[in-house]
Length: 204
Image (cartoon, rainbow, N blue to C red; front, side):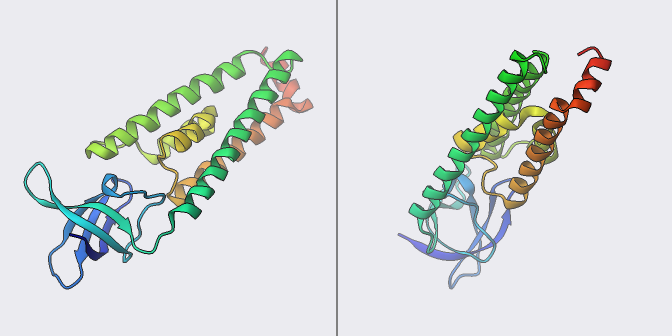
């Protein structure tokens, strides 16, 4: 049986909250993994439709949750476009690094740093998503952003596209794109005459 209610509490970092069914005073627990075809995070006071199920402790919780009135096809199209943009940026970075190393404007250390940081960042996102689903200790958002700033942003973009993790929270996405912009700006400076002079001075 389908029920309808409003989301009255929501912890976006932990991915759970409570729904107040219409006409009732009790609250029903809801977890992000119970949402079906969800392409974005729910917001407080949004109307949700759901069924009731029992968790492992025998408590009632929401299942097969949908955001009332959401149109999935449009969101899916937007997600696809974002995925293409992420792929394009990563491809551009690979081309720039390859050309710079080939022309001896960058040491091989730079591509290796990007590769290592991207792998570490991707693993960190995967572990954080697993922790969110299991209700365990989460990785701080600031830690994920620092990883991106230090060259791990390709891994962050891959994680958002493949894992669908940290891809809906607006504040996190804005900060992530700022770290990407700063990192790219730093790379452009390194490739500039002043940056090349600095590298020669430190013997890189």
